Image 1 (cartoon, rainbow, N blue to C red):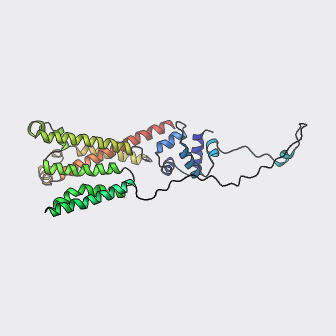
Image 2 (image 1 turned 120 degrees about the horizontal axis):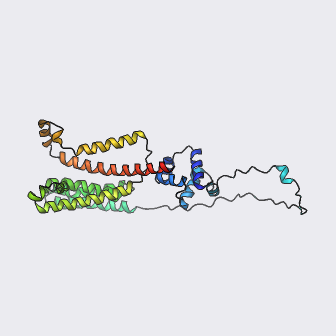
Image 3 (image 1 turned 45 degrees about the vertical axis):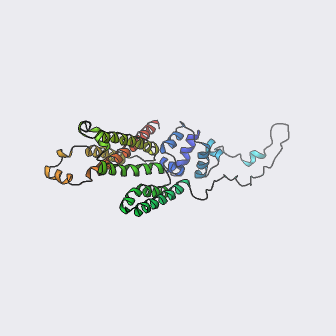
Length: 301
């Protein structure tokens, strides 16, 4: 039996799916699938965790359980046909405790927590300085990025930079739309290059490049999330893609003029729709890539 076969057999004996085992090891389900098909080999630390989860030794995990039936007592004491005398040895049981696995225990504050405390202090100082200068409301507005990123550093345990990047990006979209009239969406409007301010168009291009970079690192960080794909989830993915395309469809074709006039009166409608489309597109790319990897793994099995 190969290592992959042993892992698959032990997983089924413990009534665990590939997704359950992947969550216990903090890896993707595709990695477990590659192990079981012997297209990849787990690292030593993962082998140790597998032996702990399945309550087997490393030797049993790698080589499999010894299915050789024990020799009957009569055959053990039966004299050999050889003329040499049989020497019997008593093998003492291994009563020594298993060698402990070193565990690193972190003490004190983590780097992200220290950064969060510093950002919260900068929030307080910004509000204080603007209040002294007579602009308390301006201080609240300018301190908002420090406050949000500080709270993210204290709360989130993983992907802190990505979460902070999205928070700053959303606030930047609102600020550029309300304060400067510039937007990343204007770069797709051919009339903007003729009638809009060239500096606003340049700001829109810079913002669009930043959004693309942020989306790339987000997809790269979350593309291996564990999803147990079934028919319902695959249908939901298709429906969400349909909703995303629908958000780009011209509203003038979907609503009467009266309804369209009501929507135009909502100042923040375009901002909210732009943010929703951006986040939805990123999530769709992540789950679509995850589904593609899952589909390839199903074909290999």
